[in-house]
Image (cartoon, rainbow, N blue to C red; front, side, top):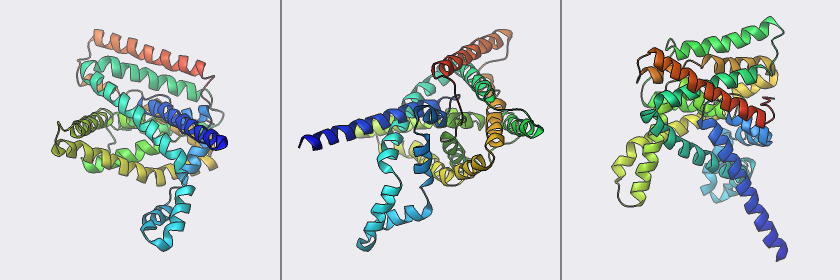
Length: 320
């Protein structure tokens, strides 16, 4: 009896610990700068995360869906265990909790203090590029070309020379695929990808609207109709994210396994080239006067300082 009680307490503490891991990871991914993948590395669960995520295959998912058949339930249970759901579920809840909380704050600040918010983001992005670049080598022409390719691609996207194809649902699906696949990669933040694609504020506001509508519906003060539009956006983003995890993330992981340094230089180059992306959000609400430029620089400096302090407290962000 005592053993069982101790075991149950231990299991609940393990779940709580994993949930806290998710909170840390979600907080990092909701803010451009340190990625959730880097947080997973720092906290020591990156290998388990990658193993669990790469276990998601169409075959295993099909085995689970076929679990309604009594003859296939044993295989369905095996597939569930192979997916490491006791780890992924509390981690995912923690990630979603953090993103939901920060999404509410970001939605409010984006309308009330866009200059401060996006100026701060510029500093976070720039400082994270500096922190990660200084841990990578630049000893060959290939290294320089890889970093330059990532930076150039991000600059083209940030300047709207390259844009996501499609509109509405298609763009939400693609944004989900790229952003969620980036969440598990060291160095790259999912929110950074959304800022680069110009979808960050829109998707955060849709998530906030969805949660508000869901709360009102549960409290019987809302209607199902108000839930449909933001709920559709959230579902499309999640579907895109699942597709990204089984496609884009696998391709990048294979590239990291074969050409780690070049791939990391390319990914960090994407971060460096994304530095100007938040300027669009500031420019939409403010004319570029000397005062606005000065305030943007001040907020960017504060964002950079916050990242450097976090780097120092963490003992350095090693993307290995």
